[in-house]
Length: 282
Length: 227
Ligand SMILES: Cc1cc2nc3c(=O)[nH]c(=O)nc-3n(C[C@H](O)[C@H](O)[C@H](O)COP(=O)(O)OP(=O)(O)OC[C@H]3O[C@@H](n4cnc5c(N)ncnc54)[C@H](O)[C@@H]3O)c2cc1C
Ligand code: SF4
Ligand code: SF4
Ligand code: SF4
Image 1 (cartoon, rainbow over the protein chains, first blue to last red):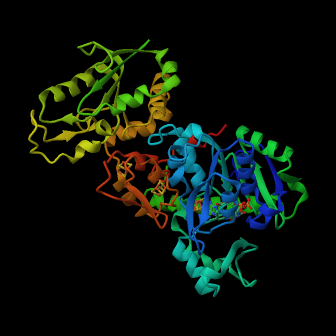
Image 2: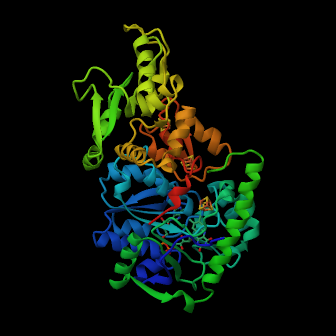
Image 3: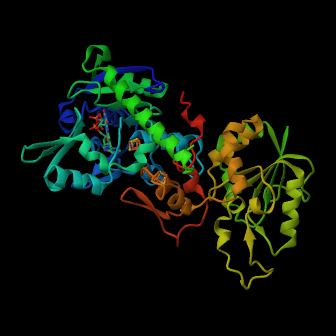
């Protein structure tokens, strides 16, 4: 089984701007790329997941670096980013749209690019897709239960959440850190994630996640020619610093292990559903 | 030269406008096709025989024998019969007919073309985007059956609508909340509530765009080929 899908290069990287690193989840690759795009005319707007308070996520069309920064950081809950794509093109009159999404959302974008039935004059305006690694997502009430009942933290007090080292972490505005075993969060997962076999956003122009790289850094796959041009320019212009993936710990091996685990487990679930005669995406 | 006709049944011309709205891409296609019949754009009264592609826009008024005869005629004359747009493909807005209208001739019953004669391809959407029309015609010209497969399947079913999202996706725990359906909807009948589509039935015109666009209903393998 192929773990990562097609890609040209994979590196470890982080944003050079301290402001970005302070707000971002990991190495700030997504925010840095979008800000770079907006500041250098490669993008004129981007679709991000904004925090609507208490980590409720809402899709937002951002047209300034400040708005991009406001929406930085992971919200571990469903955020229908693609729902605003057509309004980004129609109402914001954007010609070069950047879009970030989970692997499933990037797949949705690829589908609408190849089969643009209800997307008049939209696919040609998609200038860059950035995918974020994803093992599973949570419906908002599930997330709230994890945070409030299992971690004992009020949603309103949370400043950051993270998944790493087998645990779900919650950081509060009082400076506390709570963590529970990832196993305890499984019952709250979105069930739709169990038929998903894409961990590293295989169809994105660029995909990124924390796994594989040290804290504060990100693992980045550059997959398409479009993504490569964008990424190389960003590095040349000093928005990102990069390290060979072979030189960092824990390295690509861990990404591969997780990607394959997801594929194997969820392929079984798909087969099981097929045997029962239940529909699966085909 | 591939001979193409555009035929109109009960419809609003929106699909034809979409076809004409393909800008420079239309020119690429026009170099390889010859439009031999299109009542809105040219003065030809009879649909010629032996056409390669007939694009039919609109639904079939079952109370009008002319419409029924036309449906039979296009089937006989076309190598590839395409139900273009929601009315022809899935019934679209004409599905809402309740009968007893006062207008004459009597219009009290409409069916999509796909329900009346066998169609080879059906393109949903109200109207379908210019891009998808170009893609389908190009694929038909190139004999790209793999690309056309979802449109061929739809031509057999003649059904796609906002309800599919609830029955086939949300109700089967397949919806992961991407929001593509909401963006695809031409009438804004879909709002995303807690990351799931809610279809407002007062606004849904049964054009099928949402469910055809949903990656959790159909995801042809070729989408995975990225350059
Ligand atoms: C549900 C979920 C599960 C994840 N699981 C993993 C994992 O298993 N392994 C791993 O390495 N990485 C995972 N990630 C990715 C990781 O948490 C970071 O998002 C990623 O490393 C990007 O960090 P950054 O510092 O480059 O981005 P930042 O600069 O912090 O920007 C992050 C961007 O992602 C957008 N975003 C935030 N939440 C969502 C959301 N729910 N849906 C869509 N877009 C969103 C934000 O708007 C922002 O633009 C997951 C992310 C999500 C949303
Ligand atoms: S696991 Fe798959 S379906 Fe679930 S949110 Fe992540 S990418 Fe989407
Ligand atoms: S919900 Fe919208 S896109 Fe879906 S069938 Fe109805 S009108 Fe068409
Ligand atoms: S398009 Fe996305 S949000 Fe809509 S039903 Fe399908 S999976 Fe759910």
